[in-house]
Length: 157
Image (cartoon, rainbow, N blue to C red; front, side, top):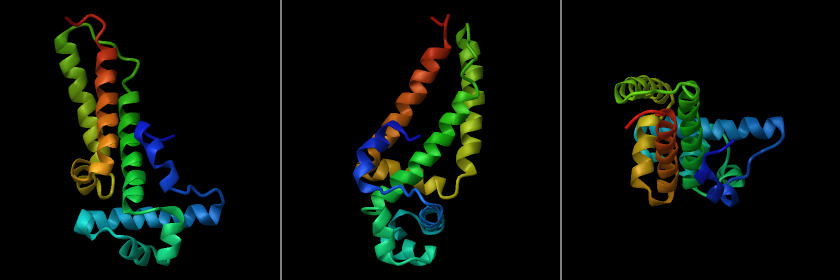
């Protein structure tokens, strides 16, 4: 399962199918998250990520066309976790604006908790705003949130 905007990165990412390849793929993603958390977006490049992951640069490029493809996978995972937080509240409907406000606060607190627990999340969120190639991911997530709240308020005027 991927975010709506992940589709445009399909040609830039090779998702592994075998267990050992999946482990390598995950090591690369984890290394990218750690570098992002420790040093920010500017420090993330294929050579440094590959070195931190214990693989060669060609292995990095086997899975990811460039660092934006890697950032896309990381952002996609963060936003899917946030969407899971929304889905926990999906069956709730609200009748008044005050109910909506209280409901929104609970959901936002949960998404904040999810985001804070995701390695590199702060720099990743900044990257979603700073890197034009990643803007669609942020827009898709915002659209999901807007639709979620619009669907909750059955009697709000």
